[in-house]
Amino acid sequence: MQGWEAEKGERILKRVCLKMFEFSKVTAVQVRLCFLPFLQSWDAALAKTAKAWAKKCKFEHNSYLKVARKVHPTFTPVGENIWTGTATIFSVDAALSDWFNEVSSYDFNTNSCTGMCGHYTQVVWAESYKVGCAIHFCNTVENFPGLFRAAHFVCDYGPAGNYPRKPYKAGEACSGCSNEKCVDKLCENTEREKLLDYTYWYPDWDTQPQPPQPRPPKRPAPQPRPP
Image (cartoon, rainbow, N blue to C red; front, side, top):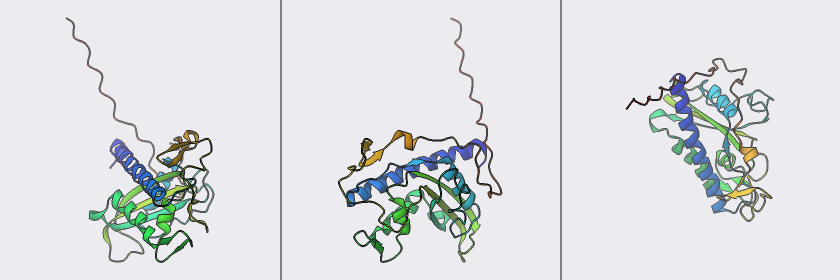
């Protein structure tokens, strides 16, 4: 897709991702009361970084996640989840469900995993309040032999999660929100969650950055006919 069509697709992806991430955090709160979970909002710079890395069609994490200003103007480091699979079975719902379902391998009491659970802990990480995602369709994916016509879905998070501690504190929902508003058992702060304009920022390692595209002109409003 090009121009305004790509922009429309990104708006749809943004809306679906935010809905699913909010559902995941709320579900985590319901399973185990969470002391301080931040509401998540979209970040255009993280989405640009996710897109730039997804285009490389590599089944590995972004090598710049811990380098200042390489993946975001302010967040360092940045967290990342990647879902790669056959394009025909991909959906945002399926990818996020796969990540969240790793909860079955996670033991909150010991903060340990019996299998893979790092995607889950990043999704529900209490202080990760910004997210940006992108999808790219690859004919082949490096480090993923035998996969063809793949969907390569990347989500980046700020601030990063998955430090050597639990993803959230146990306690009464929203009890750590202080003066912030409690919305669906998540802490809302309009200043923290406001959308920032990163129109002219791109990761400098992106070989094909997409400049801002003009939207199609609006049709003129119909003029009233004389009586």
